[in-house]
Length: 237
Image (cartoon, one colour):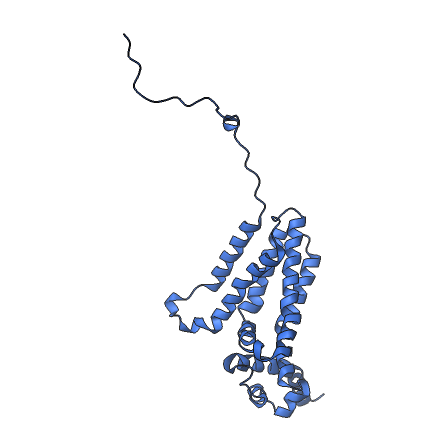
């Protein structure tokens, strides 16, 4: 095969990824509704017709962005939970750190901004996102929490509410990067990796089973003698 044909083949294989990256960047910069398909094609360096060969509509393009960046990671997380043999006190921090490394700390974090600003205007996409991301992510974390509870590693916490508390700070930090983060002076910026580390530390200490306090032998028997009144000593005649 000629070298030029090999290059064209490689370019063709890379094209879907280039289109997804271009779409994600533009959706984050301009919003989903304001972005035109031809802009995505131009950003990726292809013709508009080429874009439609891979993704027949802008809605399908956004769905592909979500699947590529989030759905796959959640599925990999579920496989990790199934295969993990160690303690849940190690598994849960791994899941949270991997999520930050591969989503929160990457361009994929912009998806949360896109969905927050556009979901109400596009019910079909909102339902797709709920089915592809929200419900599977909640199921993954609730399964992990249930595993820790069943093994006696975690307290018997309410799964639904605890799952929400686990996710909320991670999503907020992702949104912060693409919104209020632009308003903060460099000297006031947080070390997001350190914030996530503190979040994980607080979560793990809050979830762990606390052994009951064992009273010391000296204090095991209560002193039931009446309190002695303090006053002037009796006078003698």
